[in-house]
Amino acid sequence: MFSPRPGRLAAVALGASLCVPTAFSQPAAATGPWAKVPALTTVCYSGNDPFVAKIEAAQTAAQADVEKQGAINAKIKEEYQKIDPMEMATRMQQWMMSNPQEAAKYMQMAQAAGTETQGNLEADAKQKQALDDEWSALTKRYEAGLTQAYAPSEARWRALLTREGLPYHPAIGFGAGETSPAVQAESDMILAQRDKEYQAACPQWWGAAGAMPAYLKKYRTWLVQQHIPHLDKFDAVNTQTYAIMNTPAAAYRSTSTLQSVVDYVGLVEKVFDRRPAQSRCGTGVC
Image (cartoon, rainbow, N blue to C red; front, side, top):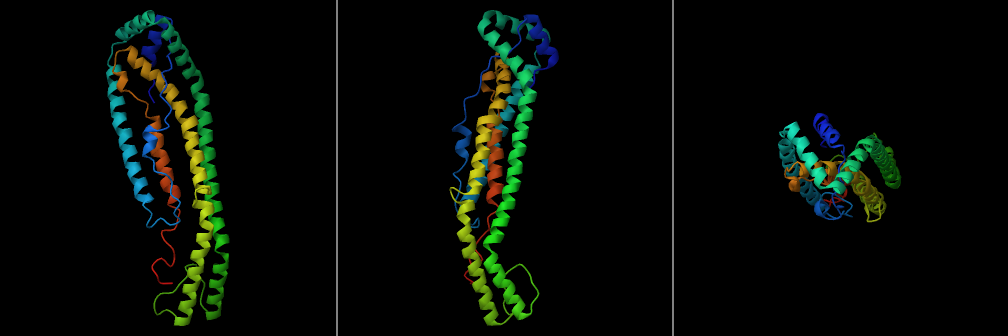
């Protein structure tokens, strides 16, 4: 986030007796960078899901966008910082005298950005923490839900081991030659049962109306409706300031949406990585 140097713009504002930016807000990002985000998958297993490659590609493309715009913004900022303070004050005064209505809006916007920044950022940080806490709670519910779903096959597995006088271990199944064909066959049946238990539970977590997509939708809504507008509001001051100083403001863009897309895609990848890679009997052993 860019902040005008206190010594320069403060002097400019005082000298011109007007010091506030006109809000030249970025348009709401309903498409644009968000178009790179693929539709969420409803596949229960990650192993052969094309979505995995799509989300990785989206992450790479979104990160490239951030870096490209960031480089443009950095160059514009560098050019702005090279302007002599007296020259900056002169340009600001001339622009304000020529654009009194826009100057008044600019002043109001700068003042609002200064007074509202801390409160908005604190509120935004609290919302982010609440979403992070919700994710932690959701993962615990997910693990508990799978434990409950697997209870019948788990009980059957424990009973098999007890009957055979074998020590308990959580991974169901035996390697070739580790036990009798009859016990091996029963363990395969337990694995097949476990697959069915997961597949029955899968939709409530990974289906279109499942808990995981619902969480991601909530997170994305927070980004678009609250987080990004907060950041864009402050960057609008920078965009107008660069225009006043005759720096190439047309090329300057807030990276808040671009970075939010990167963050969101990373979260999507983390969420869907919690799926099993494949069914227990996916290799045909069962």
